[in-house]
Image 1: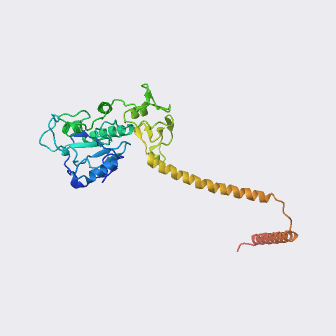
Image 2: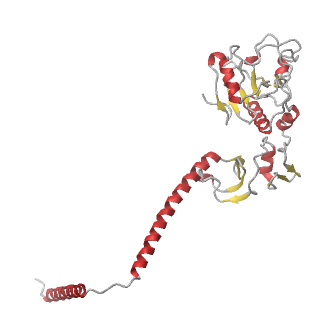
Image 3: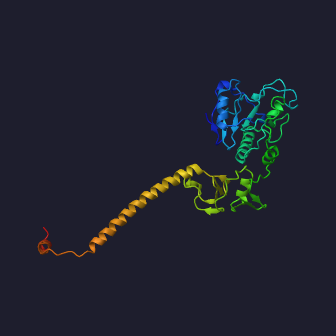
Length: 337
């Protein structure tokens, strides 16, 4: 199966654990695990859980995103309303077929662990992308949809789910508010990373609006380049800024966009191998020419017999040329018939 979210790892539960093609995507539900492990560990649990619980996605503390259920299908993580549930949620329906759900790994049993920077960045991005795909309102939930916590559905059994989740930061991010990466500084014109390198103009706006990982610092200032991607020469030139884990590009036609780091790396590595092989070939030719020059500069003895033989060959060739010239002259003097 293909994942719905670019960059997610697909670890899908069996289809008989889902509600196939029934999801209407009205609310997005935030969950936490109240247990440790990786995102992959949680996905493996979902694949084998006797209760057949699952969520569409799991976000690990390292920022890994795993997809367990396709968004077109209902997952088994929300189910039934409990006493005290959010009043706007409709009673008597299976909310699993009206929601998209995201699990977040939290090793604390009361879900009190703050999201890591990488986890926060991945979560915010994923929430935004899901809302865009299904036109889910990017605001706290109400009767017409939105983003809610598991505790809004099950306030008795899941009162601490998702527990410590940065709701205010999420909604500021979704509403277009800037989110300065932890440890970076912004003066309204230049966004400066901890290593002192600045990000300006459109690249600054992109970083502030994409839940940027604080560790993904710029390695050099933005610069103009004649070729943005060796792997895609048709893209042409533009502006570019290289970061530790990614690369931003800009053209008038496309605006700011994330460039193809993986594909670019493959092409550059191949070019490096080609240049290395060419360098070895050229070096071998240089070494050969040096050896020939050194040999030519060494004094050599003269063999009289060899000289005499050479002179005889030259004399014979001269005689043959003379005879040929005479034949040509005689032929030219003959009258035409």
